[in-house]
Length: 273
Ligand code: ATP
Image 1 (cartoon, rainbow, N blue to C red):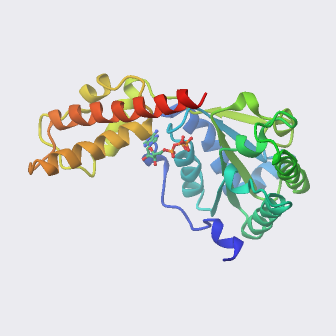
Image 2: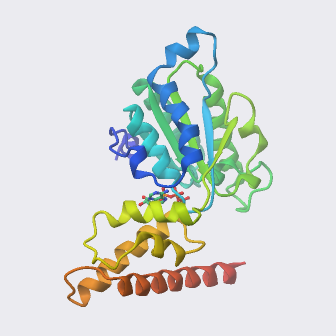
């Protein structure tokens, strides 16, 4: 298997319309879309286009979706990898993957590199939690820093990285010329939840009693991924009961089910601690 298969450089179809609620974050990434589309406009005036932008927020809030939408809006390839893909026990593999990723991206510029869970490689050095693999992780982080420093701001490659643990990141990552911009991608408020429901209700056959606003009031604390999950579960519940359309009580049952799933997950997490 060639390493190239790890990266999805296909042109993406996701656009800002698919990302609901995150108005402030969307406004900030709109600038990045323009950097990718019209880089010359900025560099001609001597401006330095940012190389790295950190998307910070809890799981399931749409960080990956937003990064894809940036690529989709700009019409550029999207290289995606998860921080945990770089972490290998074998000496040199993580660092080699980083170099390979940047090499491919530079050839396809302008483009986006998206690194999910950057904390898996970007934890501050010397404070790792996995004894034995620390040196290797540090090698990988160092090669990421070297690669980021090694290309010019006019290369057309912009790196977006996501984390829900900005507190553990090595400060070297956030230095000028690296991930020196942060965008927060928070859990939606009631209006955001209504907008996210409106996106995810679209493909679902719902009965007249189904109301996005009411669903939003019933789901405080839910992230976008959980709301998408509620819509899907509701459809499955209604279908199993042979209904011609999904009704409000199916959504209520789905909300209970998603809350149940979350509680189970939290129990497992607290057991581990
Ligand atoms: P993680 O940190 O766990 O990787 P994430 O923040 O990257 O999560 P995504 O993977 O982007 O979250 O979200 C998962 C799915 O949840 C999306 O593909 C989408 O279906 C739905 N979703 C999440 N947030 C939104 C949103 N703001 N608008 C519409 N859909 C959303």
